[in-house]
View 1 (cartoon, one colour):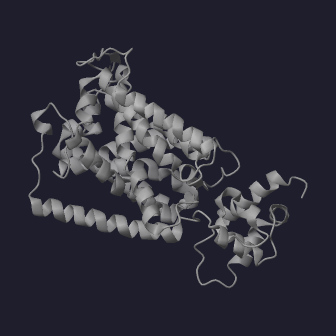
View 2 (spheres, rainbow, N blue to C red):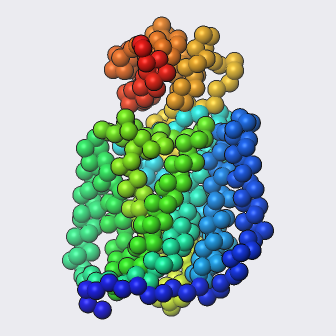
View 3 (cartoon, rainbow, N blue to C red):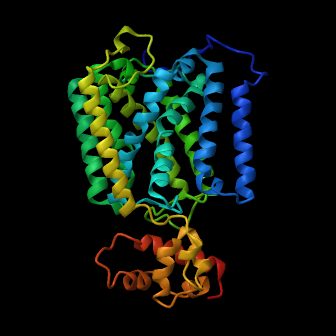
Amino acid sequence: MGRSWRMQAVLPHNAQPRHFPSMRSALAVGIIVSAWVLLVADVEPVPTWFYVIVWYPTLVLFADRAARRSSEASMWIRPRVMLPMLAWSVPIWLLFEAANFRLRNWYYVLLPAHPIERWTGVALSFATVVPAVVLSSQLFTRLRGLHGPRVRITRPQLRIAELVGLTTGAMALVWPSIFFPLIWGAVWLLVDPYVYRRCPDWSLLGDLERGRWGRVASLLAGGLLIGLLWEFYNYWARGKWIYTVPWLEDIKLFEMPPFGFLGFPVFALEAWTLFHAVCVMGLAQAPSDSPEGRRPARPLWIRLGAVGLAVTFSIGTLLGMERLTISSTVPRLEDIPVGSAELVTLRGMGTEHAGALQGLEIRTVCALAAAEPTTIWTDLHRDRATWDRPTEAEVRIWVRAARRQCPGD
């Protein structure tokens, strides 16, 4: 092969007529259209749950489209593969939520008020992450045949990759205001060597060693696609996340700084590798035509223990999110501070923070626009035992939004 690049055609093995949409796809489109109509009409609970409501039928569309393109995609959407992937997707994404306790790069607003409903919504949202990465990559069949230079992989190089991953991850967590972008990529460098040692067929480094760049390329392209969709859907939802990325708070495409979209392709590599690490451990199944890729299931007691650890970690992280990254919930009418109703929905501020601002004699959007963010943040925390919420970045976001509404103040 040498160092040349070439493309091999990837032909679908189970091609179906493309001009006849399946009933499943038609139903998915109907759900998405209905959700948009109810969102515009402001019919609850659709605005609060909008992201979850539209993302699952979007996955169905991805799955149907991908299955018409390749037999590999059909293998991915089998229940024995997809259901464990949905389940393991939750703790996989919560790893990054746990890292965000230190990074403080995003927070959530106007989530469901009841804890059970809120946690259910969060879990359902996070369950789509890994399936979205896998299914979106299956859409780029033309990239799957991409071949290029072979990368020599040796044991010392694997150790170097792990050291680089550990170092960059530590830098992101120790100095988050400077090195926060390094968290995207650090996990892949740490985990993929583990997958390579036990099952090279599932390792992206193993692909590069064989000169097969197609899977990496399709994951990168799919990651960018779902990143755009994630942010587009999130922008219109009421229950949503908001970014507080250092240096880039003023420039946004949807809710994300444009620079941040570069992280989605890299995250796709991480999500793929983390799920396959779970498969390598015999805790989930991934489709494979290779005998090496068929991993026997672990004994029941090991699987139950692993599930118990994953559930414990997930619950602990969700509790941490309640304190550190969930900023507000859907306001109840009786909880809205008198005279401060317009503040409650400003950038998802919520009733608790609006009430705190009222204690500073800030009752209107224009009064907030006239104040200085640092002064507000200092005054809000002057008599508080905890400095968790709101963060100084949140206050800046409120004031910036208020000044757009009251530019003369």
